[in-house]
Amino acid sequence: MCIRDRHEALAPIMGDISLNDFKEHHLLQSQKVGPTIAHDIKKGALYAILFALLLIFIYIFFRFKNWQYGLGATVALIHDSIIVLGIFSLLYKILPFSLEIDQAFIAAILTVVGYSVNDTVIIFDRIREFINLHPKRDRELNTNNALNSTLSRTLNTSLTTFFVLLVIFLFGGAVIKGFVFALLVGVVVGTYSSLFIASPIAFDTIRKLSTKENKEQKIVEQKMKDEQEKQREEAISMTPKEREMLLEEKRRKEEKKKTRKHKKNKNR
Image (cartoon, rainbow, N blue to C red; front, top):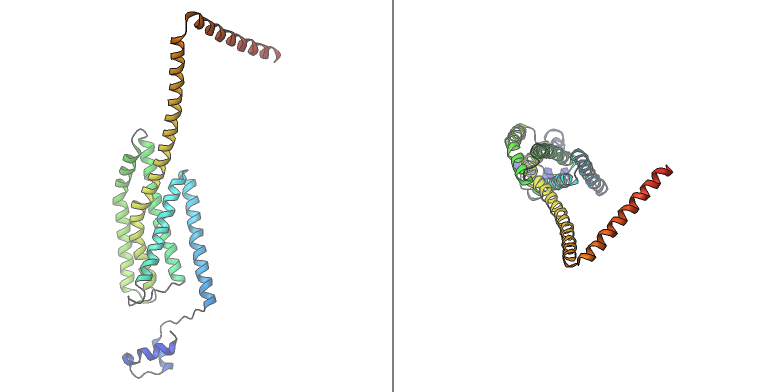
């Protein structure tokens, strides 16, 4: 909507005001974004968010030496970004302030990502601490205790941040309302995503991999037991002469090994 259209739309409310007077004294902000600039902004925003998520995944991977933690944190951050973007899309032209997707919105998304990953890293650090302190306990119990121990800290931090943003939203200017609204939504979403999305995804992926490894170990152990049982059955079914022959063969093999080792030692 251009300035002239806005002036005509607000004429019944503002009264007899000229277009020049409207531009100089009543118009707070006006932006004109062409299709080329809009495409560049969209492309840059997408690259910025993807690059930030990639760096966060690499950081958590090296910090905790486990890619499952990085996967859980990345999925939680993608969830946070999608929720904030969805709320902006649903409430566009419904709320009495601007919900445009501009540079301020991109900055808000990146701020939400940073805030959310901070909570996630603290929770993962506490989970690792409980696992190191109680290695014989079940992983599920350690994870549950770690989440309970960080719950009060997470809620207190989020509430204080939310109240500060709420005051800025209520008493701040109209220009920053969209930015602060995105932060308000991001704080709420980031608080529950680090508890109920990042941690469960990391726990489930680690558990699935551990169950696969345990199954493979059980299969190998079962094969070893079967071979031992076969050898016992063969030993029971043999006659005394056959057993003596087997023992002699084993002794000969052991003597050959000893002689080979002795020759190698002499050559050295």
